[in-house]
Amino acid sequence: TLGSGHPFVQRVERRGSMDTEAGAPPPSKGASDSGKILWVAIGFRVFHIGLCAFMCVAAVDTLAGNLSINDTDEIFIAAYVFLFAVILAVFEISQFKPLPAIEDVYTANFGFIYKPISKGVFIIFIGFLQFGLKNTFGLACGIISIADGIALQLLYCKDPTLFVPAPEPYTPPPPTARQQEL
Image (cartoon, rainbow, N blue to C red; front, side, top):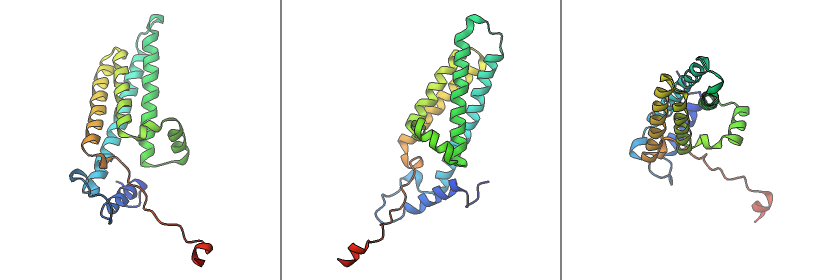
């Protein structure tokens, strides 16, 4: 379980306490409880990690099948599905235990994955790629991936506060010596 000292829980708890500060917009009906925010975020992350494992199984099943030289399209599709699944899985795992090196690479190269709408589009894209795997795992995983991407986008449209990180509280800089003289 995640204790109160875990960075992910601290971000969610900080967000819940900031919603009640003066001047903050009122929380929406769906995100009034920081525990609900925590479980929705964790639920999607854990589901995405499991989905990525399923994607990798579908890709490896395709590559391990009886492929001939005429099946180069399936080989490339399986390689791309595997690569995209690893990219998404590493991102979701890094959200539980942030590492600066991984964060730097992902913000520089995969910034779209931090936003729920574009992450949903990415998952839908991977889902359509899986239809090219031409096996039962690929078809099943493709359908689940597309449904997950659509669900992620619809939930974000219904209640964006479940996904948008709260801004850090503003603390004004200390006055300079010149400002204190005035």
